[in-house]
Image 1: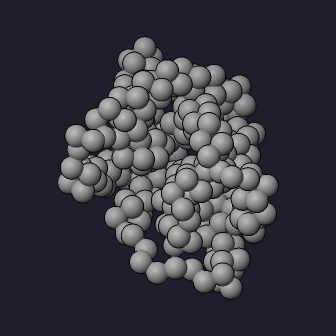
Image 2: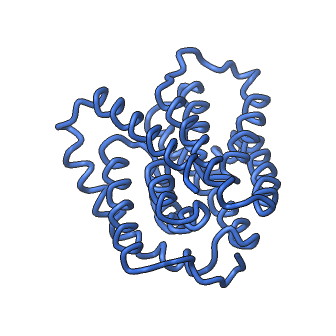
Amino acid sequence: MSLFSLPEALTVFHIVLGIGILLFGATIKGAMGVGMPLIAVPLLSLIMPASQAIGWLVAPVLVSNAMQSSEAKSVTQVIRRMSWLLTSQFIAMVMTVKWTTTISIADINKLVGGIVVLAAALLAFKPQGRIPAAYEKPLGILVGAFAGFIGGVSSLTGPVLVTYLLALRLPRDEFVGTISIIYFLTGLPMYIVMLLYGRFSIYEVALSGLALLPMFLGLRLGKKIRNRLNEQTFRRLLLTFLIAVAMLLMFKH
């Protein structure tokens, strides 16, 4: 796929179904805080190539994280503290995106499916310990490299980064601001590199603008139903659902 390639097999049905999936993903994010791409990318990948599905999330991911980045006390402080993680993630991401251009769409789908299973496992895992200050830098480099590989394949870096930041025991507001800044600062170059290497085209990026409306609607709906949910039960159902979708994706032809 080149920079200006037309989307594959894009019909009105795909667009309507895709918008419905994005609305569902945003509602889950509003209700539980689970990243929208983790829901939307594997579901969209059942009806279109995974790379094309990633392109549909460009605008919602960047806009939502730019908005939440304001919750951080200091952007420069976050960048300074997470500089090694950000650097290693960028390098690993570029290398991985380049590598994915040499493998088939079916192989990318299988990799995305496997990553969704890993993501579900990480979401079920809550770190109990705390990372000592002396280990924050070397672990940050390793976590960044691993997140870069996963992001380069699937764009789904959230669970890896969230697990690491939870182990840093950041205050809630600082956590939200920090993760959003990392998402934005790594997401923007990731999408640019994917676009330049032809993982998706400029047309998917343009269509991702349509996803902003279901994103805002879903977030509002999710917030309204948040207090009516048994979070533990709903989380288990969601993780089971994600694993089932991942299995379908791994065996998709």
